[in-house]
Length: 240
Image (cartoon, rainbow, N blue to C red; front, side, top):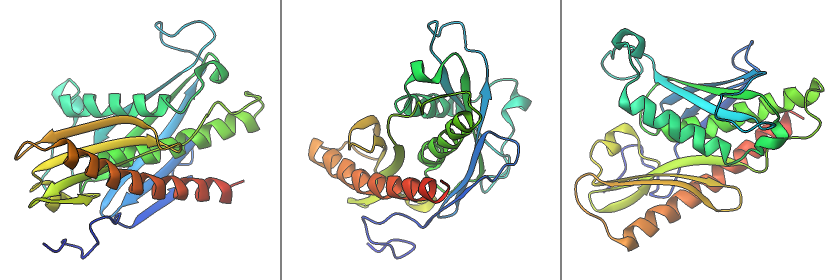
């Protein structure tokens, strides 16, 4: 089968990242993966939640989709008086993924919250939130160092995420909405710049899948994450 946008099976959608998109956040980026657009903003607070050990900091995330991010309007979580299960699950994923790149002791007793707001959804919003959220976090850490609040960077590596799936029995990287809605198997993968897995979420939505198929999907994601991390590094190097 040919892909909707004529991409090769192992090719990312076009990725555009605009740093400093929000003026008042300590770190912010607008990440665009194909037609998916997510605004990621990092905010720093000089306090930590009660569960955090003394002397350590915390990194967390919040995720939401704007009412017209999709083809039909959805209600805001605040209108429902509770966070949707999907939003809660995704923001926990983003928080876990970003904490994997941080030395919380070096961060000190402060919290960095990454707000990921989906302006437009076309598949892969959670992985775009991880990739863009990492850059917002990195920019916030740079500001803390520039302001003399931190003496060393608490980041210990890079983190990015991407999806892959099986559509009509063909494994492919970075599904858009039309592909994702027809996927037999869907897999989200978060990795660091050492090629290590941080999180893998795989689901047989239309059929079960084999270990060999899972490994092929992870292989595709590895290629995609390497390209995304190279882009993260390029952007941060341009801003030094």
